[in-house]
Length: 71
Image (cartoon, rainbow, N blue to C red):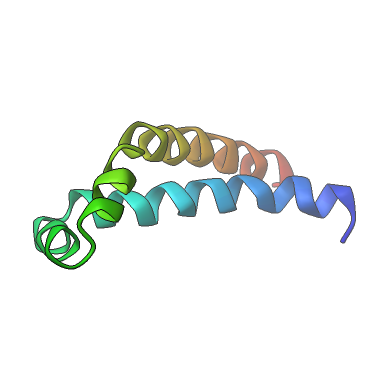
């Protein structure tokens, strides 16, 4: 994989990481399941909520920029 391709795909990875983490942390049904089954691991994951929001917005804007500049 060339550095140019990696530079194009990396923002999408960051965006989808934030999106998946936010879906898990912000959906009430998934929060309930996570607290019941995972306990301390889910509490540790919920501390990364700020990182998830940052990845979601920064990765989204960065991805948009890459798509916009390649058109």
